[in-house]
Length: 291
Ligand SMILES: [Zn+2]
Image (cartoon, rainbow, N blue to C red; front, side):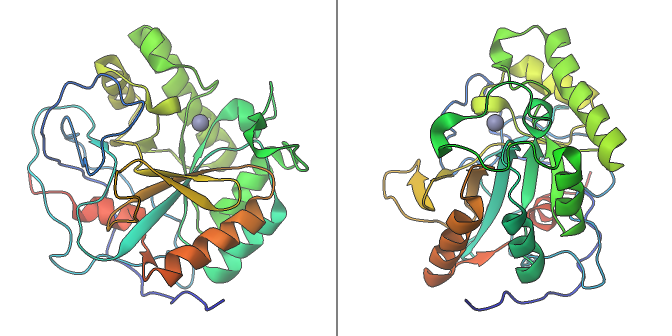
């Protein structure tokens, strides 16, 4: 397996997202719209970096080239909803959700190969409360390292972002209840890891306008969806008719049993198809427009 390139330190990753706005009403997103970049608008606040923490080699992943990412107009005052990055370069982005299974082999792979990842941590999964997703089979490392596992991931360059406390369907909750889930998650992550999330992924991709308002009040700069999911065995389940990886795709994985093996298969598959793995935070920053 060839090693990923080690990249130079990027420009500051200020996640000022100012996005287009095809301001579609933010109703359901159970199946994220292929190719969509953003719905409602931008947060007005520039925030601190959400990116992988700086290491002696800089954050991992391909960085956008000048002019590569389509800049978008901002409007409104709510965080944008993003399901893909507007680029023509063969680059895709890896995200991983929840946190039930805590396979140490996965951390080693990410660290050793400097693979860029954004993790959306859900408290009850990380702390092994309740029942894990049975889709991946019996777990071997369920809740093994609790938040210590996420500290290791962060040290390996992974950005740790917000995926609620209890994984509810947010569309069934009041704005206040949504706020408790989102702000509560940010507080736990801050307490356990010392960093404040600025990206949010709604469980099941379900959100509404109240979610965006709640997220904004919790310091979230953008809501991240996805264009394809990765199943056990490293198989990619596309949500687009042509069943192909496309530039700017955001892939969704889960912390499931056999993750280290499946992840290796997935990364090889992506590279074989001529795609690179991008630094999501740097690309999000490149989507911003001036105020
Ligand atoms: Zn989830």
